Length: 389
Image (tube, rainbow, N blue to C red; front, side):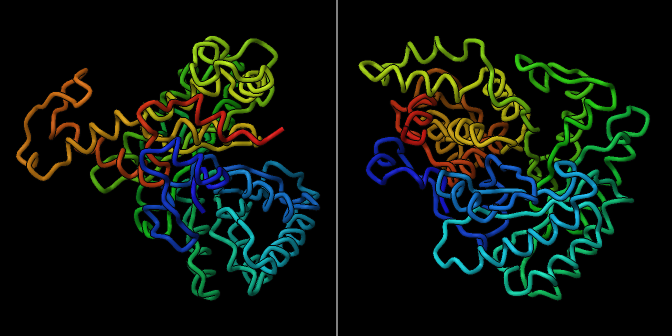
């Protein structure tokens, strides 16, 4: 797997100063946590799920969650489990298939060892489980079940807890709930790949739903939770975890989207109007603003419910040449003593000690998403990654 691996090598060379690295499901956890990108959710009941997974992998998706929880009805859980076992067996029998990292979102801890046992040898294509409504009390049984399933199968399995419970949202119980979550995930640190935010559930507690022109950060009661989660669980001092961005619910908006930026792009001069319209359709203003705000607030990657969201998330995750230049300057060995220096782009000052953690995180993102060439921006990355019509 590699981000933008579905693009021809010659085109990647044009786009990237440093190409995204190649990784596998067996790569170190720090690489996989940074590389999750746009994690595409799909109901576990889809009859052609194996074909869907292979198709999305070929289009640049590197992580998927197959859901047995909120995306299917209570009556369909048994069928969903049976279908998952069948589809994983199918995938395991396709040598050389371009598979994303695959996770199963379960409802109960008991489903974890049961599904692993039923999958048998096909468990080798499973990367882990997503654990809903995670708190210390409800989450520890999930983590214990994961550890037992890992031991019995011999397969490394990761956890991705979803932080979405009302106890986390309500001010009077938030700190206590976060402290409990911190204890639980710290105990199983080696198995927790990332923490996911369930903003839709947060909004539900107050009968809210954000409009397509609003981000999660415009809903103050939600923004305050995101800030506190990052504050306590996303620290850059070695105690934190990767925290991923919330789901964007809209996948088709009729109003004007991103047209001014596209019209100003020199890359599109002389290009067909069809390309312009394809970009407009794929690049939704609200989604783009939210991805940018996710990154500004310390989140990496994003939960996605539609394939059209994947490429914008990945395109905006690529490190710019300017960011890369700053990060490298800050981390040069001769800068270990600190100090302040003018950036190579001569437009800012880089303070070595305060900016060191940012630089280290930027180079980690550069490893998995690549570094754009100096004259390459978001629009060019987006255009290059769109499927041919």
